[in-house]
Figure 1 (cartoon, one colour):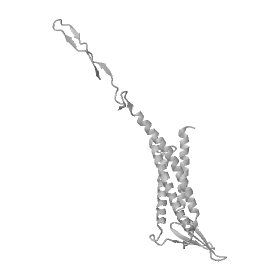
Figure 2 (cartoon, helix red, strand yellow):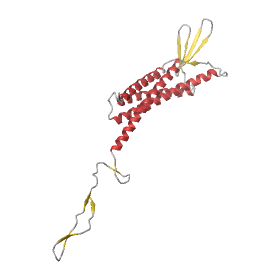
Figure 3 (cartoon, one colour):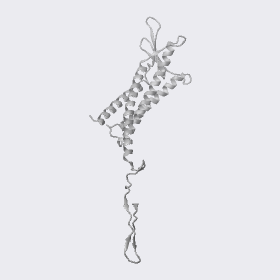
Figure 4 (cartoon, helix red, strand yellow):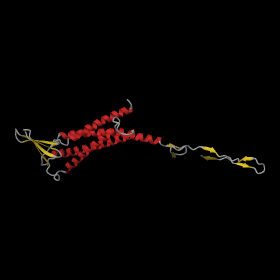
Length: 249
């Protein structure tokens, strides 16, 4: 297996990892179980409270679910607004990363030269990494707030625990970040190496000092200067001067 085939397989694996992570992050947006709490009101009746970034829900013992969206944006806690923005940014960056990866991967053959494809792949990796960081920050911040309220003995409100959506989001963030790192390493390394080789081929160095000349210019050659012919006034014979010089052609 040569290097190109090995890199192509790595790109395919990174793309699959990133797409799966992006799908997991997208799936947490409508999920209602970001947090949940179980309240036992009697021996027979048990109510479950769960919520996400958009609404609060209640499920009774009979399985009836009643959800209510947040009534106002101004009354929400600031970290909920930040988590919303981070998740949306992560989803958009993951989408752009998928488009760039499809164009720049070696197996698709949709891009231009090798250098251009490597740069596009590097850009896809940066998008994937940023998407993974944004989503991981959103889930971690949200989870930190839930855990801190649960462990605070002075907190008087309803205490919640982390729901399955947080863990799914963490897994998706890890896959996004891992795929982006692999894309960035191999795409950036190959792009920088190819650019350096091309630049070196386009320049030649003169033998004197470190001056750089273009290869299209012909090399300088030395040719002896023709010795002037001097005719003697007395003898009429043609003589040559002893001194000889050289000039550049």
